[in-house]
Image 1 (cartoon, rainbow, N blue to C red):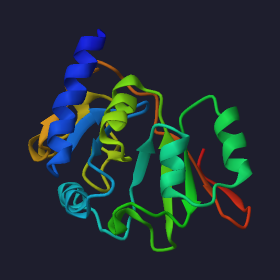
Image 2: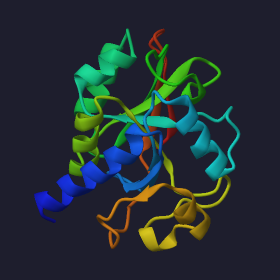
Image 3: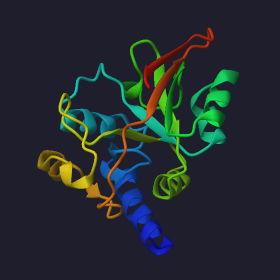
Length: 191
């Protein structure tokens, strides 16, 4: 995969996202539907497309420490330890997010986030300078597709842009999910 292809796809996806659109894109795990995590209207489009209740929050991808501190005032020390020790993609649910759309924050005032190194996602967020919403590319309640060819036509037709990378990749599985409270409670939600 050449850097030119990635850069071109980052440019195309960014043009859609900055105008409030939603994209279908490959992540470090399964294919995701995403948008600017600070744009409430764009987030609403994703809920509508997935036919998902807004009470079910979505996660955001981030590309580094600076973005993480822009969204969370307090990051428990154990969060860094988990991220350092994780050998597979890990989503952490943290307390009291800020600077994101209200409709991606869970009712208990938490938000799931995952730091990604996957080149497309990383570069796209570098360009956006904002977190990227990430939710599996399926209608709510249906199985999560493990490859591009398993994605429902309703999803394919409903997004504003489909990233033209990794259409042949098969994902192992979604990320591990761990909830960390500022009270230092640790709870594994999905191993």
